[in-house]
Image: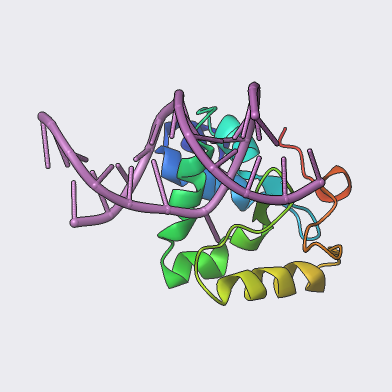
Length: 111
DNA sequence: GGTATGACATGGA
DNA sequence: TTCCATGCCATAC
């Protein structure tokens, strides 16, 4: 999606476009996505968008690369958390004993 | 069009 | 550093 199209899209569309930009092996926080989408403070809605992803969208958008500010996973669906962690580890992201990843190391910054 | 909801963030204890 | 309460705001009903 081009930048013009992104700016004209709804918050939901922007979130999907932004998350799609995150390269493998990197992650971003909900607040980062909200800010980049032009709605600072709407971090909660980022989760709301990902919550309602259709199976087809979930297959295209790397939703597993979106984590909370503590570097932890916040998936609400039982099982999704394990899947998310497995996907990230497959991309080279390591988790510590507390189940959190090193944001300072894996965080992706939007342009 | 109003109300309820929620995959978060942040500050204080 | 962890736990609780409060604020925020687009979506879904």
